[in-house]
Length: 319
Figure 1 (cartoon, rainbow, N blue to C red):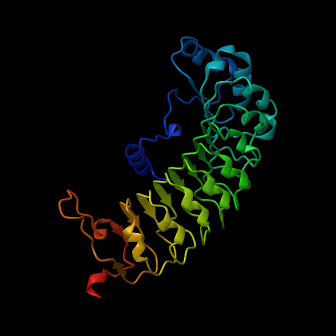
Figure 2: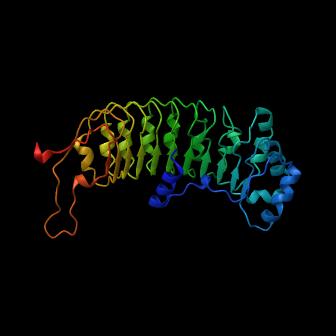
Figure 3: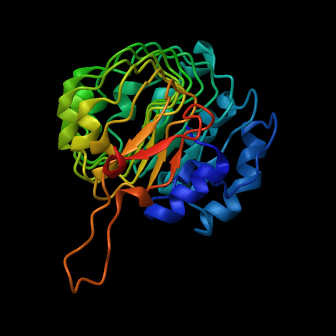
């Protein structure tokens, strides 16, 4: 994913906030189900909170008992189970418990060392808008995730062991943010281009050496992070995504930046540091027609090249 400061910047810039970064109820450590009920039943019954935070070691058994025991929890819209050390034994009754949360919108199960998605047969029937399974041990995207096609907006799968994505990922038509950083992806399915609502696509720290041309259909994409992959050149499809405002290409093996990259109409920030660049050639600046209030020049795009460009930035007009 991105750093806290970067996330704040993205949230402010796009108006799209990541609900998983916000907690309403304080974390509690090793409570029993009865303790949890006593601590949270009052605020839940009063309607003061729609979030249940059970992010604590060894708490999942209590969470299951709590969900089953408290009818008020049908009103819960956000459930946090971060770092709950969810062993198979503890997950045995989780499916029935989860089915009680008929209004659940966001579920965070980060940091649970999960090798598969628990209770997926129930999970994917809920009206989920946000799902985080980051920082686990998943090797595949859970089968059936396309059942969330009409609701899922934010899917976070960072820091797993994913080597490929299923074609059904392209059926998530409502998806706006997809976080796949720190996996072992070598390629992307062409079906990903069908996720035309995507605004942010995070692919940093993978093993990608190309992108499918179908990504040109991502007409709403604002932010594309390809930092630390295995790109030897800028993928041609990148220049076809005219909506891009923020592009990160740092820490690859790129030797040259195409001049068409600087002609992209909405690109505001380009990170290209830690590559094999020796010089950057900019196209000749162009001016708006006489009488226009705005003058556009490709040289206005901030370019972060680190030390790799050796300070050499050439204009096509001077060659």
